[in-house]
Length: 315
Image (tube, rainbow, N blue to C red; front, side):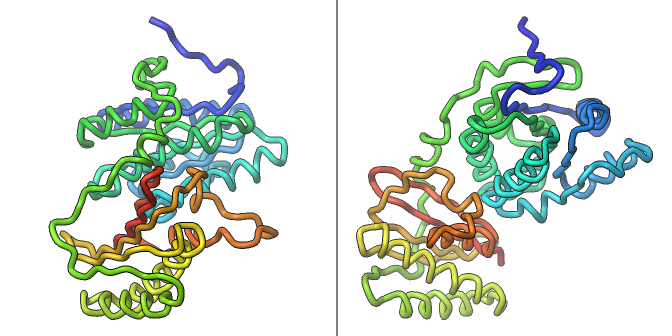
């Protein structure tokens, strides 16, 4: 049995999944990781659900002042936003010459099925985002008692290292560059699209109005309608610029969600598009990032056969 030891400090991006069963096992795995970081003078950032944050704060017993706590249900409500949060932490702390370790549980119990699917893609893309960058450590806890078995199996494919509160081992299921396959997978098709049609040059205003009218008919709030209007404008414009000059839009409802989907013939070459905040000096390229910030859940799939962006708004 090979035990993984990163040594006195991680030599590269160290991405580990922690499987736990129950509260005590969670704390037994997370607390030593957090305390070790504090003892080494590293910046420690913990992104968890509120109940887990309270657990960690209480268990640290006054040693929590140096830890940055983030509510995963807020920063990662749409999992496509999370990489930008970690990238900002890397820039802030490692850029200042300090070590960094994080705890992040994106796939927490209670997530919707579609959210868990996007958490898996997010975990795969973390390796793409940080493998070639500076060294830091990220532990991702998974509740193997309450999460679906398929979610835990997927975690093994996304993390080079797996651990429990007792041991830390290489993940035999790890799939390097697994995001390539995941991004190319087709999204499950709806039973019936309520409304669908094509758009081309000059159709962006009409597409935006159509989406807004349909969103109001679903009973969405005005804030939700405005977010979808802006998302429709950005996604239709992206199709015209990068997707062959035309695209299709489909709208339907499913259990608990209003869904708007944009498709075109383009193939996005950058797997992290929309997940990292574009530099201030960059011209354009902000559309997908803005959509991710505005919308409840965004699912993007892209391959040589085309690109689909599905936006879900919770009813």
